[in-house]
Length: 266
Length: 352
Image (cartoon, rainbow over all chains, first blue to last red; front, side):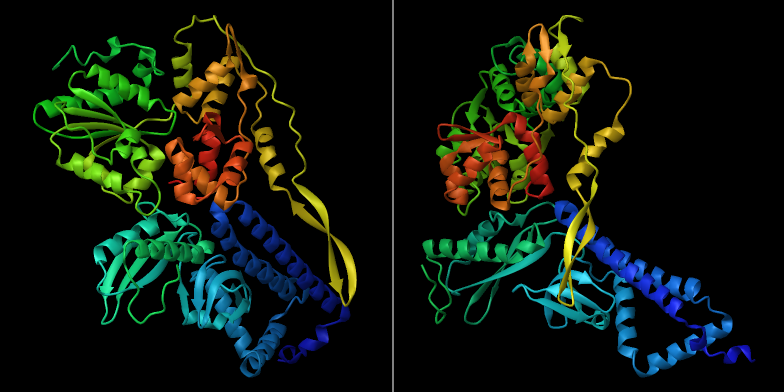
């Protein structure tokens, strides 16, 4: 009984704290170095970019997990009483102050194990949309289309993730073109389809088809062009290329924008 | 067999690129399939056939010989001529159309598929039998856009040849020891250590500290591969030559033929003329235009301008890298760069 009342802080000395700090520092450096190395290799190995980047969060979690394990078991050498005391302290800390932090770390572990998205994917998490640049212990960093770096808490992964490409380098892009409802739908559809399949950014294969759907609305007709961009980093290039060339051809074919819309520039 | 005389293609040897002997090895299956299609056509079953292969494979010459062999029933047609005529093939008493290069019937731009669509409609509704050839890169692209597979239900993809096949083709005309293979030693490869120490400066509280950082050099990692595979026993020079020929030509017999002619200084065969294209490093715009040229093997400058706008500086860059060549206004893939270009474009997923 007396053993269970040992003050866990009494076993901590300066050397122990230093050793723990060194392990953590080494884990940090190793994690950064491994991340940088893999990121560099992935950019060079073009077709396997996302596959290689998938390894990064797994590696980081493994390194930090190992560091924590080493600190708890090799450095602290916890007895059952100390383990009980530490767990009691941890429980109290979690209950009061670190609840969100733990939820974020748990979210990070879920991302690594369940893979709702990976580094390199295009995702929408909550309000943020962009390419996943890094999955950290606490948060996921996205690069938005306007090149802003946004950190999103890993807690959100449990409820608010939309993944556009699911680990693949190709990604479906949906391009909407709105035309006057009196325009020739068949001709407009053919032009939109050809604009899509002749784009330099399109990826065409049996598993990456291209399609144009037409739907009428009360005051306009919508052409929805759906195709895969060969690299998700060119999502907006494909959209721009198809839209610009399609409208140029629409104008030549007498297909107009819905009345009342801003005039299409020449 | 029906029409034994008119199908006697082997007897029609002329100065075409593909010799009768090559046909034995390369096109035996294709020829058999064509003759079967013709036989079935005579029995009332029309099943159009297309041969699909990379540029330089020798399909044009082979089809030309087939058309001559099927004379007077067959009419040879050229894809480029059909494009100029709007995609509508012959209206004549010939019952078999032999069309070389149907990849010439489209251009990769809005409105560039009209001729191909008219051609498809014509073939679908025609009573004639059609035998065609198409570049594999265009075929794979067109298959995703147009119902080509439905009007050409018989599709024959010509195989990639290995060193043994190439040896058989090229040595068949020579005696056992007639040729002497001169294999120059591979240039001693500088193999650097793939991991080096670089230096990075880190700012800590306003102080800049230089720290050593390990850096991995991808190129050195690649260079290590042949060292790891190195064998102590040197293989026979003939085998070395043909293995290198197969590797550089990508198993394409037309490319191999060009490289063989370059290497042959009778009675010597010199391997030093077989140079691999160094790894290609192109930006996206260069790669896209390269993919357009690759898809057809060769094309006119105006077609590139229709597809990608003015691109002279890009074409110049591709020429400087030894990937394409100019002949007046015709731009062609360089045969020896075909495999390297394909590998590069496949890595970028610009070809299937």
